[in-house]
Image 1 (cartoon, rainbow, N blue to C red):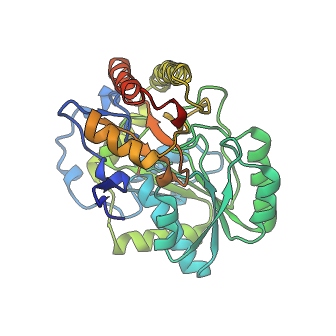
Image 2 (cartoon, protein in one colour):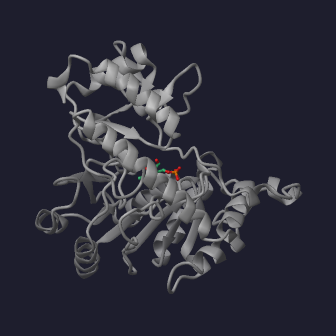
Length: 361
Ligand SMILES: Cc1ncc(COP(=O)(O)O)c(C=O)c1O
């Protein structure tokens, strides 16, 4: 997708990494909160600048194995963020099964359809109802696919799937021999209840240190699968493509895992406060939106979303993402991964832009 065509912004890649110059960004899903300070100490070791095991550092894999029931270090591949884990898992499925179908929930994280297609697989869709999976619709469509991708809490909806739906997905896919790719990058950023992680030998878990520990740029994530064929295919593909994941980043990820859980609890409390603030403000402004239960996104309705995204950026220096990029035209996605003062200023600019445009909401 080109970043800009006929003067119109057509892809998130136009905005990713853009800041400064008075820009207020509700764009990228990059936490502004600091990572744990413990990860920066004593990193002079030369070993951290060499090639490493393709499958990933053994200490990091052991630490991860301790977090999942029945997991062993050979069940993990450490990847360049969740992004590479997704790429590898779909390519591994293609190697093993050929051109099969993958069920995606729409609205989706913008990369999903492309990652699936680039792997040689075919994306098919189940439309969310009020931001959640309709179990009856899911049951109908799942018979036709080899894999389903679940992301709860979700980017871009901010919704968390209800427990009974997650259990149904777990059961029905196991019975039918269908993979569940569980993208859990927001598993710790949840406000309404404990998360429920889908389990089983058919589950291929994707996660990263980007969101929980504010380590996006270090690019450390992982694939966890109890299916040895998937792990072996993913490791071989990784050797031929990116090689080992950044060794320094893996060391920092290991240290991040050692900090007390209170670190995550404190961060989540901040996210929740911001969630309440942006949700209430947008409601007061007249937007129609779902209340996020996890992650850090809102997806309010607005007519002419592409024009809105362009004008907000070029006239008001505000970054918002077009819902169309997530399979949700007629909405914009706002990330609330920014300080309260910035959010206030950004919302004031949006309010000003919307003056006289009440019928767009
Ligand atoms: C749902 C989802 N999956 C995967 C990713 C990729 O994250 P990473 O930085 O770990 O590659 C993101 C990033 O925003 C995301 O929102």
